[in-house]
Amino acid sequence: MSAKTVTRFAPSPTGYIHVGNLRTALMNYMIARKAGGEFILRIDDTDPERSKEEYVDGIKHDLDWLGLHWDRVERQSERLDRYHAAADTLREMGRFYEAFETPTELDLKRKKQLNMGKPPVYDRAALGLSETEKNKLRAERGAGVWRFKLDQERIEWADGILGDISIDAASVSDPVLIRGDGQILYTLASVVDDTDMGVTHVVRGSDHVTNTATQIQIMQALGHTPPAFAHHSLLTGPQGEALSKRLGTLALRDLRERGIAPYALLSLMARLGSSDPVELRTDMAALIDGFDLNHFGAAPTKFDQADLLPLTARYLQGLPLESVSGQIAALGVPDDLAAQFWNVTRENITTLHDLEGWWHLFRDGADPVIDDEDREFVAQAMTLLPEGPFDETTWASWTAAVKDATGRKGKGLFMPLRHALTGQRHGPDMSSVMPLLQVVKARKS
Ligand code: GLU
Image 1 (tube, rainbow, N blue to C red):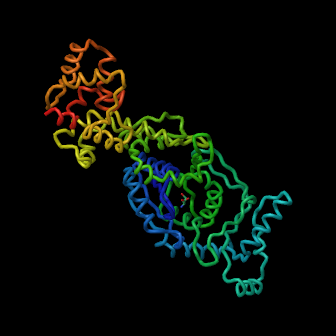
Image 2 (image 1 turned 180 degrees about the horizontal axis):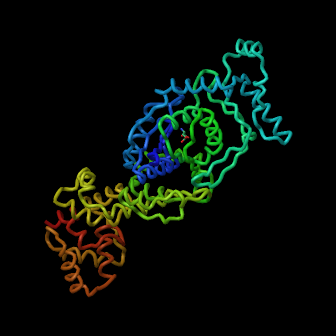
Image 3 (image 1 turned 90 degrees about the vertical axis):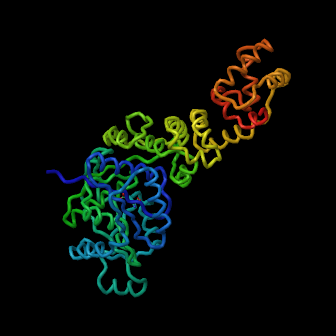
């Protein structure tokens, strides 16, 4: 029997999550759900200074909003004993060593190596230190950092997206797993968690490829079989420009505030960068059904947040009144007009924020916009407007009466009237609009 599929989304709570993180979360979520497995939300909070509860709450809120429900939460800050135990094991095996170089010294070494045309890999000088030298350095500089001693061989894996990867461990610095102040670093914590929690598949950004190489060796040193790895490409802007600096403005909470619908975001991010078309899906099962990690490519993935708007508009068009009645009531739309209001506006909005403008228009009337040549015509038409209440037949009977009286027809008849009543040359079907026109109705009755 094959092992249960277990995946995790492992954000560091040092900020709000953005579209790039969502891609990672979503892929891991879909893999777990598709296999009937488990999806863990792992909070990578080993950095006590930068981790904030506010961000933990924010991450959960964002995932909830999108319906990406996790089976359990794990927090690295509660598992420090496990990481120290693993560190002890590595120390006992001779795979862990203390190093004392300051950041400035390391920088200097790197520059020298680069000048000589060599890769800037840590030179392992600390391995040559005697106990006496170490004691002296410890007394002068405090505790050193702990580095994992890589086996200098090729590290290989079949990546779920990038294909066969082979990295020469000699081209990678021995990773620091514990800082001088004792803080456990992500690389070690993640390895221990992935093995303890039975994680079978790890999908993350391609900025983690080198980490994966070192993590595979650490896992093997600790006697574990590494999970399957896949690295998705990083997102770029629509022109292919780096997005890393702008990701801050693409936080999920900001998109939510801008009125982007969850399924618009999910539909885009679940397919972007794959050979499958982006189509609006309105339930999770459909998103999961059509998801296949093998369809994703290694090339950078262009993300344009403008794509979220038409998807949101299409999503809203399909919503029944019940789904938006709260927002509609909050605008002050009377209950008996809510259904009419939604029918009229749903095809004429991009986000729910646009409802407000429509309601103000219907409630307060448009600024009178009447072209000069239509002034007389509109004035005459207004005298023919029937008494309220208006209903769906009002537009037809009114425009028929105006046509008889003025001889105008077609566009010349309808356009100035629409324009006068709504301030717009295009928009919803006027038959449906008439019953909503509060001011015009009030003026007549
Ligand atoms: N906390 C890490 C990050 O946000 C997790 C990476 C991983 O998935 O292992 O980049």
